[in-house]
Image 1 (cartoon, rainbow, N blue to C red):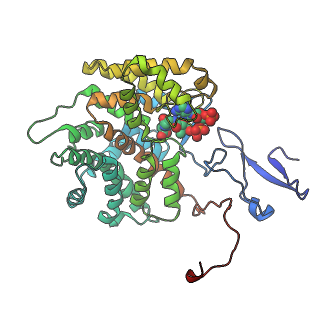
Image 2 (image 1 turned 60 degrees about the horizontal axis):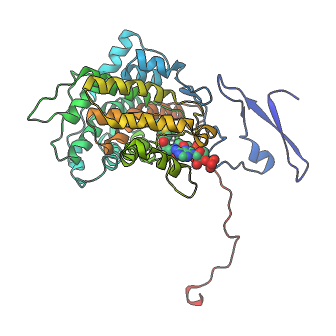
Image 3 (image 1 turned 90 degrees about the vertical axis):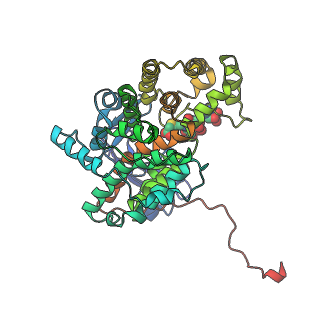
Length: 430
Ligand code: CMC
């Protein structure tokens, strides 16, 4: 028997079936079961997709045991230290680091698309002022397909390219103005003389009455947060974008689906939940009580910002952010007791048998909230910032899927446990 197959033995019938095994450039071997149903009449059952590869991809690789994350072969630590978000966008989309000229052209294309259709501001006005900014972002991104008809034909290369530029360029404008709307301040236009991160900050914090001077250290920290959230393989929101896109839906609709999926507290909503949790703990003396709650199976409480489906050693993004956190707070002269509380919580949890046994470590969301709070963002904005940064990852993965020859609609099956066929009883006889 060849080494590159696995044999499935059906104990009920004694029949044997052979399936090919595929080797990626990294990662575990993969059993190719595409012909399983045709050959055996059986499905596989894997809710939560804990053992399922849903696609072939060349964009991002994670080794959860080693705590490794790389985009197009470049380690996240190197990108966070030496690169900037625009370059990371280019690498994710095109697969290679840009030359100086390629980077300038890319930045210029993105910069040309930062404004949103003026009519979109009327759309914002339909929301209640106290709406969660994620609700507004989700709605406004979805509405982009109603404003930019000329980039919704997914089979047209040029339209896909324009939609990509539009999404990356307009997300900061959309997110910043969701914030402005929620706090009752006037909408703010982009300033194309600034970098991507600095422009976003000015749109969030500038008011017509007073100029906001962007602090370089803050802009760099913002840029780093964007880099660290740019892509993360086939997570829930990315898989949502791919699934929505597999039916041929336009890119704006697909990214809106990604925003919706990201919102949940088990995914992107965790950064907001971490800060709320730290505030609820309030003092180091309460840590033990909350750790006990997290370990209690009868209590739904979980330590937010801890654990990850893939990382079972360390989340490299959390390591970068822990360092950044100290740096930003020091530069801004902020002395946030929540940082000390977070570090103490991390120390105690990492020594606790429950967390050690289950390989639960701080994830990217554990420290990002403290930095965002120091910059001046309210917690309700945290997940919107994640969505802004992840847009490039979503669109890169969507593009890769659409450009794949023989791309198919995603259509999982199920283990049906409902009623067998039964008689319909007329209403007057029930
Ligand atoms: N606090 C307490 N216990 C936990 C936690 C936690 N944060 N995370 C996992 N566990 C326990 C869980 O109860 C289970 O215990 P047992 O084996 O005794 O039943 C075990 O660890 C394995 O957990 P799981 O739920 O099977 O793991 P999962 O891979 O399905 O979930 C997770 C991963 C991230 C949803 C989960 O760890 C979690 O809810 N963490 C808190 C939320 C969070 O921080 N999310 C952000 C993830 S990183 C950003 C992103 O990618 O969006």
